[in-house]
Every structure is written in C-alpha cells, then in structure tokens.
Image (cartoon, rainbow, N blue to C red; front, side):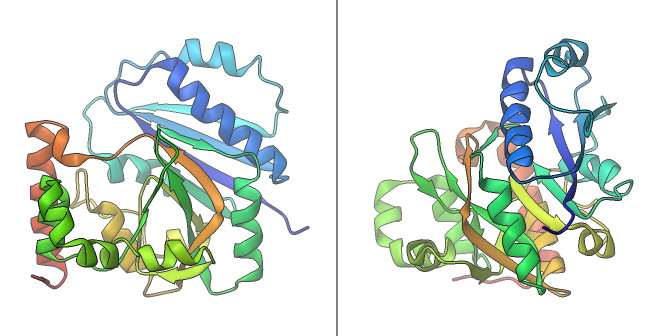
Length: 272
C-alpha cells in the first residue's frame, strides 16, 4: 500500500469540548482504518475560549499511537475561516491535506475510500464526500457554478420557490451526479470536508484572504480546477451538522452577502 500521511486543520469558534472530541475520535478511527502512518491535526481557535487542556486530557486516553499528533493555535482576533486554515496549510508537509469543519463525523472506512481513489486517479487533486445531515438524508456538497437566482432561492428557502425552480436547484446541486452514485468530476465542492493532494493545495496557496466566511470554498475549488480534477467520491461518507445560512442570524446573512459580492466580482456573474 502506498504511504499515507495526513495534515488536518479544524477551525473552532465557541465549540464545546465534547463535540470536538466526537469529531476527532471519528477522524482518528477512520485514519487508523486507512493505515495513515502519520497524522498532524492543527486546531485553530478563532475565539480564544476553547478548553484545549480538557480536550487533551481526553485525547491522551484514546487508544491511538504516538503517530497521531494534535497542536493548538489561538487566533482570538478571528481573521476568518480561510485565513485561519492557512496558518496550518502553509506549514504542512504531509502527502495529503484535510480541511475539516468542527461538525463532521466520519464513517470508519471513509478516508480509506477517498485515499484509495486519489491513489489510482492521478489527475484527482481534491475529493468531496457523500454528505448526510442529522436526519441521515443525503445533501449535496458538490455544486455547479452558481447563479444569482439559485443562490437567492436557496437563501430564502421558501417551499413555493423551491418547487418552481426545482430543476435549476437540482442542476446546481448536481443531483444527477449524486443519484448516479459513481465517482464523478465536479466543479465546486463544499469546504466542510476537502481532501487535497497537499502539493496541489500548496501550489494554489490555500484559501484567499478576501473571504472571511462563505464562498471561500467556491473560490478554492475554482482555482484548484485550473491545475487538476475535483472528484465526488460517494464511498467517502461523512455526516455534517451545518448549513442553513439563511436561518443563522443577521451577522451571518451580512457575511454571506458580502462574500457573494466578492465572489462575483472575482468571477463572472451568472443571473439565471
């Protein structure tokens, strides 16, 4: 089996120790199943109040060897999701890099499925998993290039509009690819779980510092697609408990709209 080494970064903001432990435990189990020989996880705290010592006291009792390491960085100034991940990305040296949200749970064989696909597909530099929500329903983590119409309909999330524009929404969220349930090339992948060939991630410089939150994964995906292929790998399975931007409050809404404007200024505007 080819050598498998992995850098991972997780950005936290006001998260509870028990929740992060659950994420890390599932990650380590999946890494062990995949025979990952070295794993370096960097936890970046963008609020400065995470109880790291409490987490470490639990981690040290886990049945994992010394090959899995955990480090902690405080960025209480909160420079944003992408910039914080870049702190770890720019110091990374392993073969693969996993950008991970603090609310993602792995199936035990997930990483093995993703790494196996990347090893046999030379052009693949980034994989995206099948994502299930808290109700165990499959949700799309892959996208085609967004239009203003689709983003608006998804943002307001009104049943009538969802029905009227179902075809547009399904096209945007790649339902044809998801229903096909086979590895497929895609345009854009969700930032909640992005597994890169690290040399490619370093080549494109990680995340853009233009985006504080939202659309940073769109930008990263489009830049990555210029040097290699992005693949949806349905046997790479996770559970994700995030989403629903339109229901997160005024600050998140403002941040979403600001990032959307920046994204369309950087790229082309698609109305419909």
